[in-house]
Length: 477
Image 1 (cartoon, rainbow, N blue to C red):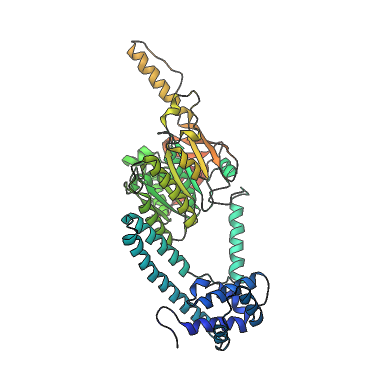
Image 2: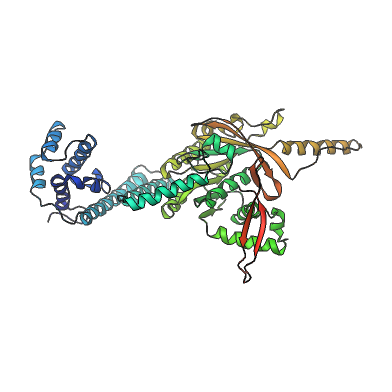
């Protein structure tokens, strides 16, 4: 037998021979192998030609193969006769797996050469070398996973599940990850794989709270979410999400000031959250290469990850450049490419320039994003979180302060409300309309809800022996 640990010529010939003598098996083989999995160049080009014949609805037989190979001036009579004289295989799947196994080993061997080239010959920085290696390993691991044909029972079950899922969405027109907000879904159709979504706002507008509401909706729908929190620890993020989920005021949660009923609700909600696919990395010092590495690894371990969040973009570092604009350009482009590579939407939060606060109308525009050029170019969707009451409160405090400085008494008819109108301004939408989604921000719970949304009753079952129900009012997010 001709072969070693990295290739087996006889098996390659036998697989090609089996296809020629029984073309109906080609689809099975094509589902597991690609031309690069064959070691010999002649075998690669024959398999490529088989693919071309199949696409053009031509027979995959000796005559048509020979004709197409001659057109390409790639016909090798000796190699072709070796294939035809090889007996077809009876247990094809085992030999297909063998070819795939050897192809992966060859890729890994090639990778070692590439590492030497970029690390020594090209003398790239170690972080760049690690990024190249990790990306290639991720690609190899994906290629190692072959997808078999789906049979009728499995497809029927999956179809019914899909129809039921669409029914639950209530004909919302959502084709990606559901945002949980009616008007925002109308504008965006949800977040689709490969998109880079920027959520920007001035401090105190609630961009982190809004993004956590988006993440909560995704995990409630059974999706996996990865969060990179560069500003606050994971425990604080979880407290915010639990406040929004249970309608227990955030300040009460922080100090543990709750009634027995609230403690029961919190315990049940925490148990529920512990079963979700939520992953938080709260390393405050992370660059684009490290983020790519971590997210690739997490996605390979948990394919159910359907969305990633970075809070926030300006706290990330590049790979050592001194020009901050170039660094941000590297980060935004890196995030966009990573979203496409992993086939998930990536949401990155961004700060806005304070210059907008000198305008009469303080609603943000695209030009208000810090280091906006590259971010605006790379993003598929850019949204701004805006609450007018934030500025109203600030103005009233300034007026009161000035009045006191002048020895005057100041009386204001403005009062701070527990619920404030909020706008999610879609300033850029590569594949849809721009516009404004009108929401309400519930301060105590750091929760955004649709304007005019009717709260629904959520029932948590106590784990205690009496199994009594405790009920709270909660607007879905």
